[in-house]
Length: 305
Ligand code: CP
Ligand code: NVA
Image (cartoon, rainbow, N blue to C red; front, side, top):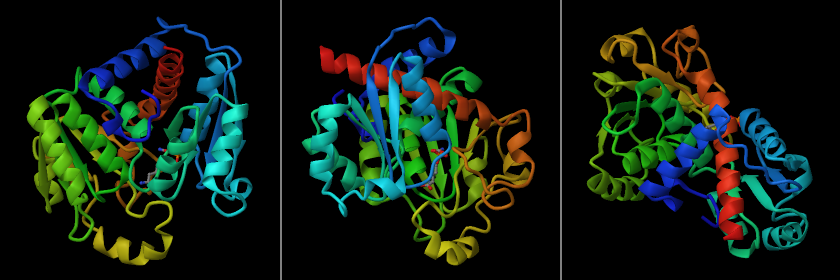
């Protein structure tokens, strides 16, 4: 793995190996060190979990981080993307980038001589999906064959989770309002992966139909970062797309509740749901740390190989 820009950078064995590594770091079985490695964090958008988990991860691996916030980067404005990564490639050992458009991270990867990690773009949030799958495996005893219901926007988190489920043979059902479905090129790619893994993808409109019999219920914000101008319209369109008591009743008893956070209580998730015993969202947040360690370790080792 040269870079980690999208879940489709992985095939099924590579994703399984990555998840094994996540579990190994979490249990303390893997104590691999990458002393002196430096990670640059280039963030065009705010972050709590992604920034913190990367900074703690590189520190635990024996290295350190440098954070550039939205005001400092000026990516493509103060300086071209190409020049920024050519310069950073001389100073640091990897870049984790959170950008508005996905093409920015693919452009970074084209010019960088160090690994680029997607720390969230408008298209994918692959590091989140690795933590999601780890959490699902912990709570459900595995991912293959599980029914995962995604309620809401066909956004970056929905896409990365779908690819992960498709690679691992899970059954992914998504209910989205008209106009907010997964992109057609994503579903076409996912169906190919499902055919090989034994997984499936079902596209629905009705959230309760998606939730019916689910092992896990997943949702994300109605309005993602960068879409703030659409908020009023999205609040109207997504009003029924919520994990609530009705969705819990439709799902299997004790179905695992997942959310990447930050959550908008009373919007995509009803008040109080996040704190139920069946909610794994804070394990999911913690697993971001072990996932980032596994991603960075894999990238550093693959570069050395
Ligand atoms: N889930 C997630 O990526 O959270 P942050 O935006 O806080 O990093
Ligand atoms: N879909 C959300 C995820 C935040 C972690 C966003 O892009 O803002």
